Image (cartoon, rainbow, N blue to C red):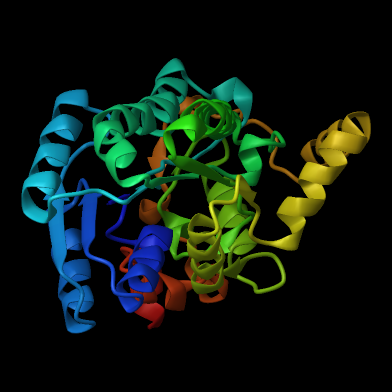
Length: 309
């Protein structure tokens, strides 16, 4: 069972599990994207159940779990992958930004875990929580996201300790940037175009972002081995190591990056307004974005990317 399984990293993991003979339950909010993902996975010979569900809603999660168990009779692996991204200077961030991040990254995995746990105990199953390097090291201009992911890391590590006696393993995943095609699937505040462009460019190159397929392979391997942690991408491992050994240095680097490399807060009246990155025309800059990854992982392209393709 994979939340956020219709696109991006969730779809990459679904493909990997399918190739290894798994039966799949994919949960996501978009029924259209679920249908597209299911059609492809069907062609790989994988039995697929799709459930349109908002995992932030406890009742919907409980109903989805009942449907999955009625269909397949058991749950062996729960992957909490659904996520949201907000890119904003803290001064423009709103309380709903933090509430949405916590609802998606903390409460949703807690809802799914509680609903799946009786079945996972029966099968001595596995829980995989997709956190982020941003759940171990704070990333400037991503405070709401980091708060939610830090919370997920805490929940995941607590579950690891407490569920082990029941034979249920918990793996915490802390990847660095990945080429999942989600570069325009973000909400931005502040200097909207600059914030959106920097985030998209960060995922455009193999030098700064790793392949989602490669990350999916590492995650599935870690789940099979019942590892406690996996950090796809050497920058993630380096950042976590630096945070553990020299937190003052990491904090200083983050402050320096904020001052020298990131856009200043907006002086315009609309700086506090959230905008969908897909709705911001990037012009020729869109040529540098990872549009190929968006197509590969069932993501929606922005109009400026569609034009250049």
